[in-house]
Image (cartoon, rainbow, N blue to C red; front, side, top):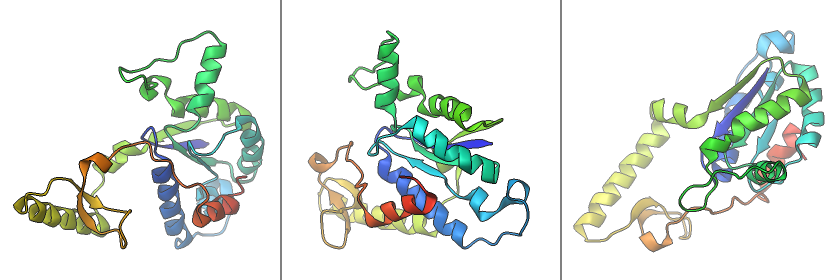
Length: 216
């Protein structure tokens, strides 16, 4: 079984990596019964075996060889994939085949039409010998999930700061300002808000996570 957890967003490197870290933190505190990894569900079979983000180059052939060993040992492979990961490779392959990648009015490649999750699931399934494949898009689960304690605390603090800012006639986007010490929640100036910020792939915790899952 190949399972690809596709994290939505063109530049969702940080979100993909952080989601993977949170998942593995929960996994480490989970108890498993002993038995065959392919059927009983061990920590190794439930772990993440690859994290693919736009900030890291991807060699699908090399990853296929590595993950084939994981499949043989555990009976499954679990991949956390950023929707924007590998897009350059997909575009290059399309152009080599004489196909024009679909683009929106802003010139961005339409990810929904390219569908990286489906593309890589087919390529990887062949390389690792997967008999079944499942692609799950995180956005659907995120919108349907009940808020937890962290969510409710963050929402309340943003709402309160939003009311304070409105009364003070201060415009902005409520959120944690990471450019200020202590990352306070405040009305962040609109001109500072933009997308496309790359994730720091050199972060110690991220490199340690890749080392733990055996990804170069």
